[in-house]
Length: 344
Image 1 (tube, helix red, strand yellow):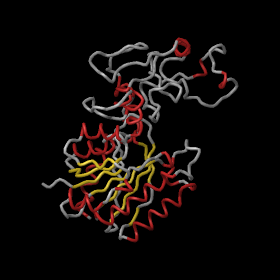
Image 2: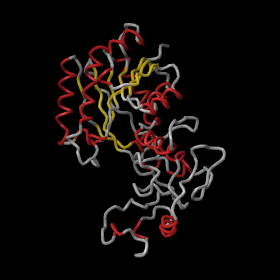
Image 3: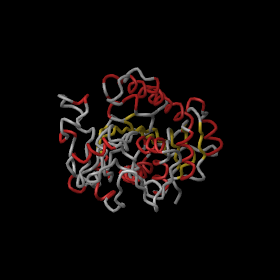
Image 4: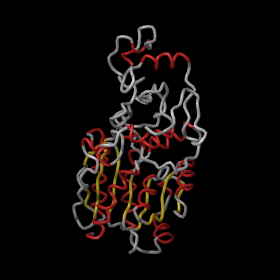
């Protein structure tokens, strides 16, 4: 049986590509301008032609001629940068990267995919940036595609041990309505932090696992260790701190509950960001150990297999992991995409 062809736009470190290849899709080309993420992509996805440049400089005609050999594409993946639409972006609505999603119709016009899949943060559908979505809809309609209404889902319902709200949309030429699959891990079936990282070697501040290059603990300062020792195990937060150890900027402030917060063993993790190994950036403290989670733990919470190799330094790898689309979600979506391709 022929494997459906895929082009992965804004491919990052390659989680989407790897997941689709595992589900017997043929990813023929990918586009991204991040050189380090590109090294990770190529290391793990050999045989895929990566266009490592600004997407606006990539000619879809080249992909059609060189990688598709003149044939139409089955699936176009569009996971454009989410920062322009994030609630945490103070410049939301005025971020030049927001227009990058509008490159999709340019590629669709030439590659003629049966299905276009968009994934981003829920903010994509917010009022501040709704003009982008309207423009996308009009541009797609002009070349024969109908864009679905945005759907917001929690990836914790699709095999990801993490609360991760995402906005997904589909576009097709036939008008066939693609419905998201039923949750694979709903409610009590959600995968917990314990299920994802509970069997990893315990580490103290500054310790390393000799058998796993990504499983090493930050070397925390003594003041940070004193603070962590006061945070209750399994879900504690900064409100456990004595007045002596409370940060000056937090005194008398009820907000920022996740800063210096611990994860819960038997719940899903909070949303992982590019700062996912920094306890000052969110609830990224280990449930019981006095340290931030490691890169390995972050990768597992994003559902990357331990065999996936990341290129770069600690900060660069954390950025790649935090920006990634969790492979487990894409794998859970793959059967639905295959059925839809048959009908389109």
